[in-house]
Every structure is written in structure tokens, then in C-alpha cells.
Length: 346
Image 1: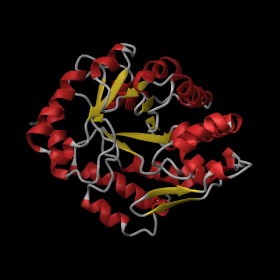
Image 2 (image 1 turned 45 degrees about the vertical axis):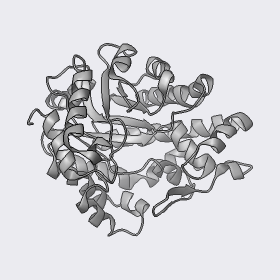
Image 3 (image 1 turned 90 degrees about the horizontal axis):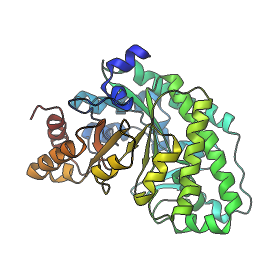
Image 4 (image 1 turned 180 degrees about the vertical axis):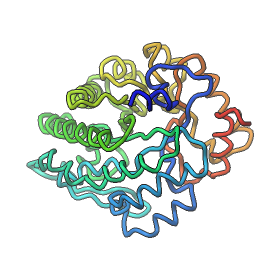
């Protein structure tokens, strides 16, 4: 592993090195903006079947790597495979997103054993193994999971959208929410550890719904569960770097960085690079934070904003990425232009 770490730009930066040109990957890089992905997706009955089909999921991961000289691949899966494995029914409504049977409508919350849940996720780990074997030289493999609060929110209210029901549950059913988060910490730690065992070089925790929380609630449902998750990973023998991405955390970011034990910080679109650098240790890698909409607009705006991000994060460990996932309206041509600028080829 030591030799691999020194040969992969992403891992060098995650270990605190500042490179002349930052490594680049971007969230949802395997996705609907690519025509070949849309064709591949049409071959499966539903999205979960897609995620649980190692050959198909591996192909989705490889598609953007054939188009763009990226420095990392990320596992193709979904954050809701964890509740699915815990025995909660998960399905996807075309054009609307995921659905679950909401916990807030139930009086007693029961979940399957996390150890058994991980056994059910064996197709995901087969996908990791296949990706690792197919990667070009110099490309790192990122494993991932949803943060405990983001996954809990889906489970509590059965859908995305506004988070009012989940946030009310924190006050109305505090003990049950705490117990749910504990189950998710254990299951997620095991899930991430299994990905590393299968070949992932590093990990990202997507706490995508960190916005709008009062500091005390943020600490309770995001900072402390993430801290326990990282600690549990280390107890399981995982030494791979962990990127935390608390999207929309605002002023709560500093406590998140200080207390959770993550090795790197994913910076969202709204957070200035200078602020992120000021509140993080000097050697901590920062990842981000181009506005995804620039990949829809293209042209001079894309070029200007890409260079602005490069300049803003210059002087410290930086991984070029978006401030959130790429949108289906982005074009491959705009992505190619962005990558060329980051690589110093334009």
C-alpha cells in the first residue's frame, strides 16, 4: 500500500502534500450527463438492481475514465443500500427519487443486525474488487457512504425534500433517533471497512443534508455520530484517509473538522476557500468547490470560475472537485474543458 500511496496523486494530497496541479475527480462523475450512462441505465429494471449488479456498476464507473484523465474513480452505488440491507424497504420513483417506509409513522423501530446487513451488501464489495482490477495506472479508488444523519433523514420521513419531519423527530423522539443513529454508525463503519478490504484507497462520507441545523442539534446528529463512525473505522483496522463532506454546514464546519477525526474536508459551493483554509489544520486537504452550474453554462464563465477555484485553494493540499454533484444538464464537452484547465492543458 505504501508504494501505491506514493504513486497516486489523490492519496499524496490526502496525506498532506501540496502538488503543483491538484488531482481532480468530481461527485456523480458516473451519471446522467453521459449518454453512454443513460443507455447503460436503461438495461436494468430499477436503480437498486443497477447498484447491486457488479458488472453494470463497474461499467458505469469506467465510463467517465475513458473520456477524461481523472485522478480517481468512485464506487457506483447509493447511500440507501445501508437501510435496504438493514431490512427497510427502499424503492425509487422515476423522476422523483428514493422512497422508504417512514419511521415517523411507526411506534417501534426495529432493524436487522448490522453484521448480517453487510453480508447482504456483498455485491457492492464485488463491484469494488472489479473496479480496482480495471483501473488505469495512477487512478485512485474512492469508497463512500452516506453520513448517519443524511441516511437517518431518509429513513425517518421516507423521502427527500424538506427535512421538517426528521428535524421534529429529533425533539419529539430523541432517544429513538439517537438509537437509530447508533445503528447507522455501526452499519456504515462495517460497510466502509468492507469497501477498503475489497480495494478502496480512501473513503468519503456524504453528509449531504447538514444544512439548517442549530449548533446543538448539529453536534448531536452530525458531529458526534461522525466522530463515532471515524473512531469505529479505526477500531476496525481501517487506516485509509476519510474525506468528510458536510454540505451546507455553514458555521458548524469548524466544530465538525475539529472533533470528527476526518482527514480531509469536502468544501461546498457556498464556503469560501479562504474560510475553509483558516479553520482547518495547515496540512489538511481541502476538496472542492466549483459550482456545478458552470458545467451547464460552459464558455467563458466555466473557464473563469475553474481558474478562480484553482487560485483560491493554491498554497495548500487541494483536490479539485465540485461543490456538489454534477447535474444531468452538464455536457461532456464542458467537463472535458474543465479537466483540461485543471490539468494545465488549456
